[in-house]
Image (cartoon, rainbow, N blue to C red; front, side):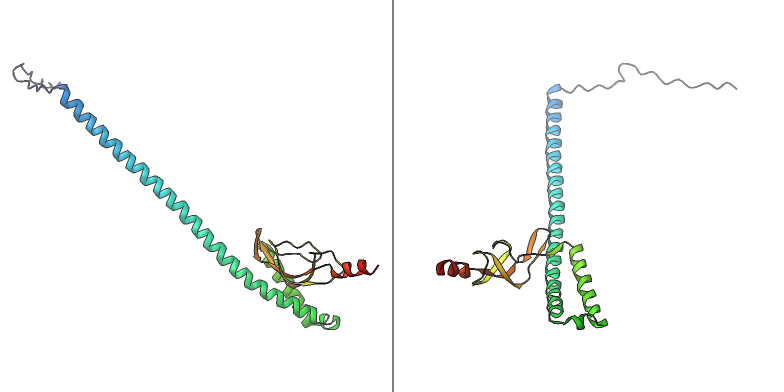
Length: 185
C-alpha cells in the first residue's frame, strides 16, 4: 500500500515571473506608512489621555456633589440638634428625669453620635480667643475676661472633616470690666 506522492512540477526559469521594483518607491511607501502609523498612534494616545482626564474629572465632580449634598444635609440636622439642646436647657431637672425627658435626651445623644460618625463636630468656643476662621462676632460685651475672648455663644457652629459648615456666632469680650476696675484703683 505504498502510495506515491506526486511530484510538484518543476518550473523552468522562463515560467518564473519576477518583477523588479526599485528600492526607492518601497522605501517611500514604507516611510509614508510609518508616518501614518505614528499619526494614528499619537491620536490614540491623546484620545486615551483625554478619556482618562475625563474619567478622573467625572469622579472628582461626583465626589464634590456628594460632599456638598452631605454638608447641606448635615447643616440642616445641626439646626435640629441645636433645637434639641435649647429644649433640654429649658427643661427642669424634674422634667429631664421623666420618661419623656429621658427619651428627648437619648434622641439628642443619638443624633449627636450620628453626626460625629459622619465627621460633624461642634466647635467649642466659650473662653477661647476670637478666631475669625471659626467664629462670627455678633456683639462686643463688657466682661471679666480678656479682650477678644469669646464670652457667650449665640448659635453653635459646626465643622465637618476640617471644613467649617457654620461658624459659631458669638459675643466677644471688649475687656471693659477689667479696664474700669484698673481705672478705679
